[in-house]
Length: 467
Ligand code: NAD
Image 1: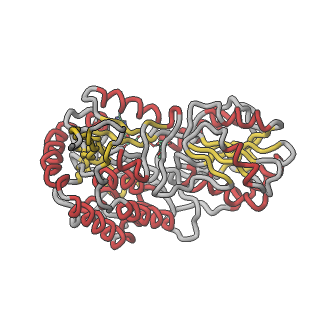
Image 2: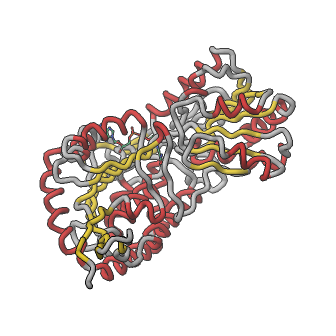
Image 3: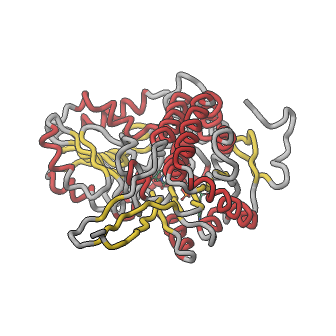
């Protein structure tokens, strides 16, 4: 599926940047490298389109339903392109596209009803929900379509228009998504802009933007919030995670090992809410390490287009370098690689699925976010120590507790300082639930009705009660 003209060996055309296939490390296509000055016209058109879009609730819901249907129809093409630029196995890309359509359909509902305010006083007031205006949506490269839809669907359903900027590592499936949706949405209701920095920074701080909804790293999230402060635009930030999985002493290691392994390694570990640390009771520790390491050694790694492959490449060269670095530092700190421990000696950005044992708790792979196919496993003797360790980082996205008895696990889960705590699984999200990181993992709420209200402002009409 090389889309570059055959025989073309030069780099991207002027005004474009190259898009690389992470399974080969070679450019296979290009995307427009838009100049930040273009944003003035883009945002002005988004503002003009807002006035018609916000006023017809029924037309909006119908358009979102049509958008969902269009995504389903285009699923094979969207998924193939997603795998090519992102690296994930095709089955996972198809699941991501299905989730994108499902999210558009979930939000294709009538607008919220006005809410009367009753406080016993003789007034008759009500809250009417109003849209905000043009919304900037900025997303990373790990789930380009799913995360775009998590922003688009509630923002559009609320009556806003959207300027969407994908990561320069994964611009192509998002451009195809915009083209697929163009048949369902009025012109300029959704605009995709692509380019390298400072395009995102200029979008986040653009004076015509009324809400910046961002998913990415903590460091960039801080920059986005600082940029949006200039125009006092609302910010919703979904940031990094360092989720711990705590195993209780009654856990059936063989029964949970597959689920636990894939909760850490799916999408090559590049999931904000992947399991990024495992705490196992000392008595079970050797068995837990070996169960995870055996799965890491047995998994088929390769191009996501090969149906036999379960684990693709890391998405990009800088991320592979970060994964290699934290792994090397852990080994230098005294950790032992029970599986993997190194990048794979082949073209593309492949890293061996890696399970690290005997890792010092101060090692960077434990305290920070590895965001790759590397999992540290730590032993504990006292459950309180494991809970304290789980809560000891600045992150607070998710966490999980694993036990033969969910009633034992639940009070432990309740002590985790995070946005979502799972029992006996991890990283499962319903479209209807709030998704909000604690501590450095986020600001604001996405998901379900909370995500919709995050894109609306309350407008109160206050009048005396009729007598
Ligand atoms: P990143 O922060 O480097 O980039 C995210 C997006 O911001 C990209 O589109 C990028 O081009 C853009 N960007 C870069 N600099 C910018 C700036 N100064 N102003 C505005 N935009 C800018 O993150 P990444 O490496 O693409 O993604 C990985 C990170 O995303 C991880 O930390 C991961 O945990 C996090 N993430 C969080 C969630 C969540 O829901 N909490 C989901 C997925 C990923």
